[in-house]
Image (tube, rainbow, N blue to C red; front, side, top):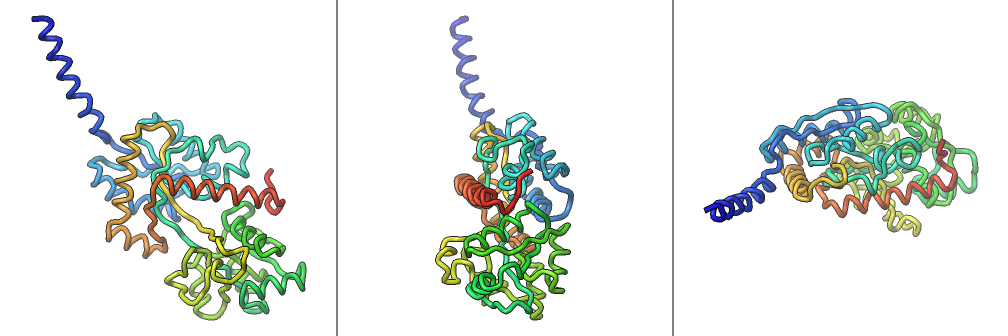
Length: 324
């Protein structure tokens, strides 16, 4: 009788354990945003959170934890139990810049994370003040080589994504232009309009009204294909410059968890996130906010981060961006 009873218990547990493993998620999920409300990271997180909660059948709580150049939020996600119930929204600043320029960042982008999906991308346009006698990248390179130390470009701060993105294209063109760093992209754009600086890599949303009015001249966009909002502007790849044949640069927003979460949780999160990002109403809202939906695979996301880290290391190695 005892033997029969034990057999029944074993059979019951063999049925229950797989069922338990398949119940993820069984409680609320925390989505950490390592910046203040507002801005690309927060916008994407909030547009995704509600439909994601509906799809997963559990609340998704958006938790803004700004500070220390995003380190506070990222570290809080990494320090949470690795069960798949704490995820974070990330960007180039947190994943491909800070780990290279901040010795105290406290994490490794390629070892400490489970990549879920690159959610959206944002591409740039290299714009010039109309006073600059160069209307293409070829003309820009020729002008700078003939007139060294005459031009300056604006950034939203030293070590920012715009700083890296500008240095990358200048290095590929084989030219040097003086950087002028501002406290944010807005002030840099205003000085570009007034002619205090002559060049800037800018977000297409911010630059387009001034391009349309003729106050700025677009030289090239940074994506793999022409942008719908600037169809007459070539990409870097389309300029005919050999060094730029494979070159793109972008900002992006993606979702990650800590390394070591259960594989079934990672799989379900990836599937749910990409499904939500492709919903017509979510895609429409993201595109209206200036994003292009990617909803890529974890492998694609990981490789994109790896490539960006390599490109940024080259910029730092050149001495163009100082690491303190």
